[in-house]
Picture (tube, rainbow, N blue to C red):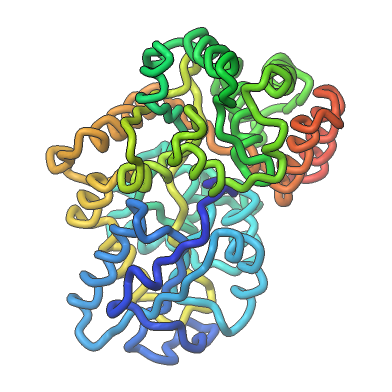
Length: 432
């Protein structure tokens, strides 16, 4: 998100030069074709990310399998799609296929508004429901209230994602530190860096990283029932319970101790990732969506580990392919989804640092990619995917950003922070 995370503006248009064209006009609202020789595609993955590389190859494969049909790719950023999707999908300019953020507040909301195509029949006929496991599938299905986990298929993920601790092995070695295998190891490492005038944690107060740190702290004191109550409304969520209170108080304490920079309030996620890439921040807690980029750009030795001392971490199936209700060429869109789930594309995605959902594991030969997938398997086997904190209600992402910024500046105490979250959450939870 990630989650409403997330990635910097994609520059995929340049990467796909020659294979992709600029977008043209939209199609009819009944699924009929304005141009049966064109598939209009929107996504926001960076060209050197695992998904960007894999989907560029999928475009070539699609055009090879569909002579005379061209893919018209229109570059969008995550924020553009996040903010404008409801308006665009309710117009004649909707694409045939679009990457969209998963969860109740995003895909769930659009499904409830009648803006997305029900993919249930295609999922059954094309076998997507067999390829995609139950944990990843949670974000594909939404009920009549737009709540994920059951009901009709409105999106198809072709990768999974989860968060982890990225650490700069060279910097750790320079200060005599090993891999943080326990929570105490992590805290001790941060103390060492602070003692040497280094802010240990890369952070973005203006976007998702800050509240994802806080959510992970809460998850370390939570269980599956807690997650289901918060994310799926299967129980009462109390933001003053032990988990949320520990998280808010610990996060504020980490700011005071210098683990998180007080000057990170206005920092974007891209800047935080670059600070890790440049060797300025020795630790970044974030998602697998960075993995391929770090493989491609990092000039130092780095490693990853699951958040120590917690069975749960942020993660889910990846962002979804959704087909707008008004898409002109739905069959072409379904064919493209099929190709992204093929062994060829899944294996490529895995070797480029993504987490495939239908790869041949014996075909994943890159050592770092093997580690990425092995850790995901560990997490999946223990039912450890706990989704993202902004998912439960529409507009909660903005609340989390603004309120967590106040914790960083010290303008709000943890108790008041939790009050604000409780108020926004309770207003947004649908009456069921």
